[in-house]
Image (cartoon, rainbow, N blue to C red; front, side):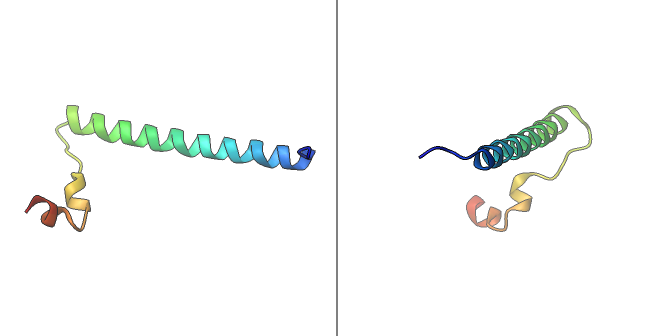
Length: 58
């Protein structure tokens, strides 16, 4: 069963969207990590964002 031309284009578009989202998440997480390490302005830690952070710490 051959892949139709339209299906190949859809698959290519989906891969591009996934790669773009992956790169954005990587860039944001790297930026937040660098900000946390090297800046006087500290972003909120992950434990403060997690509703179960207190339970996990306990």
